[in-house]
Image (tube, rainbow, N blue to C red; front, top):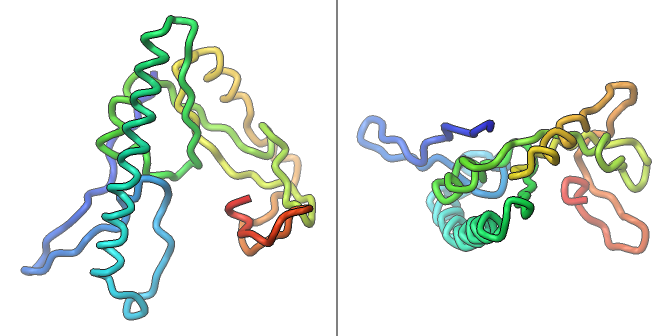
Length: 170
């Protein structure tokens, strides 16, 4: 089984000042911000509050994994996250990462994900933690063939019948 390890530190101390690392968000990578435009302490407090809220979600995921493992060898657990998500590095996730296999697939190959306006394929790499060896092997085959162009995930789109949304959330 492949196991994720490591992860970013949450705070560092240099020359008598403490700086908070913003890379410990459980759901995704930190969006860029410009120093001076944002109060770093307010941002750190907001991120810490979000992390506490998300810890409930991670504990629920662990409970679902334990339930599936308890039910039978034929019951499985799957958890999807965008590749690059910091979720797998969270302490609460260590009990999920250890007994699962990590598969990486591309959404242009696995679901034919397209920009709803231009219809260009979107690669969007995804990682799935699974207890199923069969699912792991199948998902690992869903890699981009590199025989087509990809739309850049930026800006917004308006899917048919829906309101405008960020393309990254589509």
